[in-house]
Every structure is written in structure tokens, then in C-alpha cells.
Amino acid sequence: MTHIAICIPCYNEADNIRLLYNRLAATIDQCQQYQFSIVFADNRSTDGTLEIIKDLIEHDSRIGIIENVSNFGFVRSSANALLVPDADASIFLMSDLQDPPELIPDLIERWNEGTSQVIFAVRRSSNENRTLFICKKFYYSLLAKLSEYPMVRNTTGFGIYDRTVIVALRQCTDSYPFIKGLVCAIGFAWDTIYYTSDNRNSGDSHASLNFLIDFGVLGIVTLSRKPMRMITYAGVTLGLSSLALSMLALVSKLLFWSLFQFGLAMFTVSALFLLGIMLTALGVIGEYVGFLSQRSLGLPLVVERCRYNVPQYTHDSNHYSHNTNMHSS
Image (cartoon, rainbow, N blue to C red; front, top):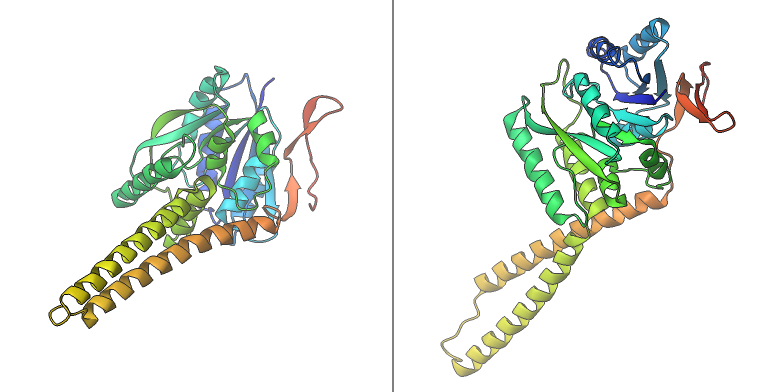
């Protein structure tokens, strides 16, 4: 029987977990031809999320949990949630109910066609804040233009990933991975299905402006060298332009000594303009250097406090088993 793991990262989602589980259980109960595991990855919640998950475990043997020792942030915890469970395919699903669990049968059906190793669920439209949605669409359009590879747009990562993809992603040494970008960069065949996302069901979003900026920059520095090239081109262009203008100013002064005035204002504006260009260039270079520095540390995605009932592939018997004792990792 085909085994599918549903991977759900969560942090302070106590108001959403039970409703998410109810909708998810109702959906997968209609797919009796598959074996499912539901794996919650708790990123050190403080609102009782973990206790709710443990209570659900008592009533449903399909549920497992990965518990982190501390809050490692959305990017690292989400990547670990997707990559740890072993199954024939893994489905990544957010816990805020903006992405509908009811879409899972459609994802599985498309994956079963065998033409694509990843099926992304892409937001055609959204019931969230319209300004934020437009900004996200603009960002993904910009990222697609800057990227060296065909890039999926307007997705949270919600979708189904074949086991071959998961195995390949595990081999990446990036401790701060942009998973959907890596899928596109590695070259896997991917496809999309469309849906309309809902508002967050309950609670406040944990995605602050700083996080959104950081996540956006992560995507660009992971997938593109074009900003560095643009800096090089801008530097050469400004250098040649400055040389030409300097020669023009010198010739004008020699020809019209008493009439031509350099002027303090011209020098001030030129200096501020060049200073702005240099600081911007240093900022872009700094982002790339910081990204490379973080990767060079070779940090683990997360450190787990314990792991329970998470499916693992047993090579000797060629099947999937579950670790059924709560243990430290």
C-alpha cells in the first residue's frame, strides 16, 4: 500500500490544531487505498499546542510528532518537518488553515499520473490582506525573472513531494534552505494545481515584516547571481560615466576658464549619489557573504528533543515502520 506522510510544522497554533486535524482526518478517510501518517513538527510552542497534539495521538495512531528543543525559526523547522518522515510521498501543509487540507486528494491524483515528482499547490487568489497578496505576487514575479531556473510562483510550499525528491533534498548541506527554490534548482519535474487560499483561521500570523524580508532575500540569494552581476555592470557603467564627465568638465574649464564653475552643489549631489550606490552594493554583497557564512557552519536544521511515531524506512524488510516510543534525538 502506498504510504503518504503529511508533514505539518506548527508554532503556537493551539486554536487551529484540532480543527485542522478534523478537516484532515475527514479528507484522508476518503482515501482508503493509501496509508497515511500525520506528522506534526512543534517548534517549541508556548500556548499548549504540544499538549493538544499529544492528546490527539492518544486517539489516532496515524499521528506522530517531532518536538524541537527550541524555536529554530520557520524556515529550518519546516524543512526538517518535510525531510524527516520516510514515505513514498510527503505532503507539506501549513497549520494555519490558509491552505485547505481538502486539496490533498487532488494532489495525490496528479502525483499518481507519474509525470511530475512534485505537485505544488499555487494560490490563484487569496482571501487574505489584498495588499500583502499583491506584494507576494510581485516578489515571486521578480524572483522568477532573477532566477537561473524556471521558478514556481505564489506557493507556500504546500504540495506533494515524491520520495526521490526528499532523498535528494536530504543530501543538501544548507542549514537555512529555501526548499521550493531548491526543488526547482535541482531540476525535478514539477507541476501545479490552483486554489484560493483562506484567511488565517485563528490567532495572529507569526510572519513579521522582518521575517518576510529575510525570507524574500533568502530566495534571491539562493537562486540567483544576477544581483551581483548588476552591481558589476553598474560599477563599470558609473566608472566610465564618471571618467567621461570628468574629462568633459576639465575640457570645459580649460576652454571657458572664467565662465565655467564646478559648483559645490554639483560635487555634493554627485558624492551622495555615488555613496548611495556603494552602500547599496555593499548591502547586496553582504547578504551573499552572510548566506555563504551561514552555510559554511554546517549546522543541523534543528535539534530535536524527541520524536514519536514518525515513519522510517526499514531497508532490511523493505517497508516503513514507526518508532513508537517517545525518545530523545
